[in-house]
Image (cartoon, rainbow, N blue to C red; front, side, top):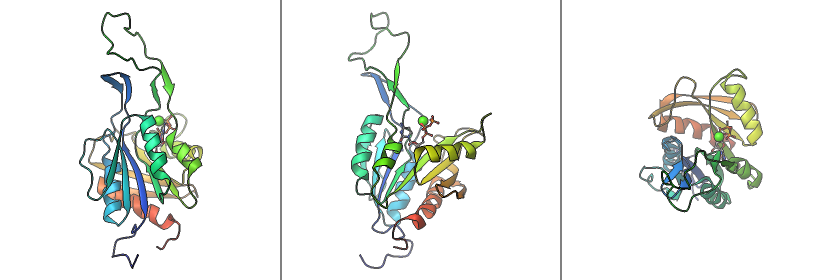
Length: 232
Ligand code: CTP
Ligand code: CA
């Protein structure tokens, strides 16, 4: 391609982003879920597309219209998200795991609706672990591919937010980890956000509080110089 237009610093880059939150079925009408709205992942997709990227959004239960020019792959469960991400990530330059993936799912899914007073009435729900999609994507990543994880952390007796986040970055093996401090209250569903981007090389980039589009722009500004072949 020719010279990219001004601000098109993701021109020709292939970006895959997961967003939203998975739902793990218990019976045909019920699920275990989480409160992720998908707004931050959506903003990342919208901003990347505006900056010239070829964007695929793997959307777990997100109730938002697809951003302009973005291909959306709808998924429900962690297993579905895993299958879609592994397929879409194959030829991507950047993979972003912004989705809230359920750590556990019900061990069995009842074929019929669980009814009060029936023999199938449960008094507890056995759970099994879901696969760690981010860790898998890291082990499967193509040469030069950048893998970005997300973490919502709180400080506790074992350490502050960044201490926990550094340990998570090392555990997951991704290149960058976008950290949201949720100690002061939850960010789920809010229009505004702030973050710190930790890199495997030890650096930390603070993204100031702003709209989710502004935070997305800050995240991409941290990612772009690390892309293979930069400047592009
Ligand atoms: N993630 C994933 N698959 C999972 C769980 C998490 O891909 N089964 C990804 C998330 O999309 C996110 C990152 O891993 O990008 C960190 O998620 P988080 O829930 O903070 O990490 P966990 O390893 O599940 O740690 P915790 O026990 O603190 O929940
Ligand atoms: Ca988790």
